[in-house]
Image (cartoon, rainbow, N blue to C red; front, side):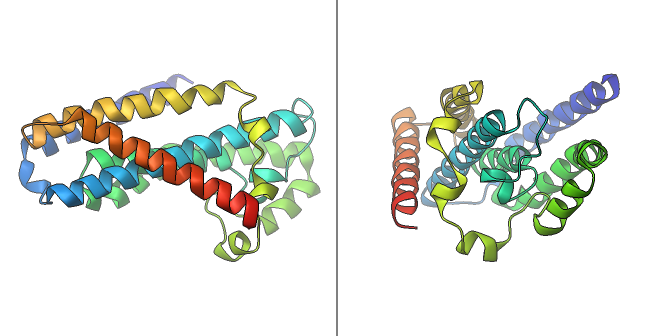
Length: 224
């Protein structure tokens, strides 16, 4: 635990230093206002997807794991073995799209791998010891972190996500906390990098992203 805390602190310090360097060297943000707004919109949308995936995964596990006694292989866990981590990855990618240059996404992916890959392997090792052959079969047919496009095309949203389950845990607080943080950080970034900000525009971009997310969820839940 202490090693993990030290590692997390080192990563956080590194991210703060890199962010300061990027913001002081504005040449890294060679984008037009329109392109910046487009990235902000996309970032908000990806963050919302990550939040909701974490909500759905935690809620489904709570409803079906029998307090840890059963291996959950349905719902979000039918898509990937670690949907909570995938949700966190999407949230992080969304923040990167909003706050860092777009080309830094591979750098974020590398940091995410360094931080969580060993942890995921350890957790899966414990699951393998506990569930034995059942977990081995599950691993063969279900990707660890990133879903199969073929599987996604053949799967309906309503077979994966359950709204009642999604809103049954404390993860639902993230629907307010994380967007609020994103809006605050985006306002700060625009003030530093672009010399000014418009909070109303930022709020409108978030509301537009939330509307697109809600409509998309409704459409795919209803029709496919």
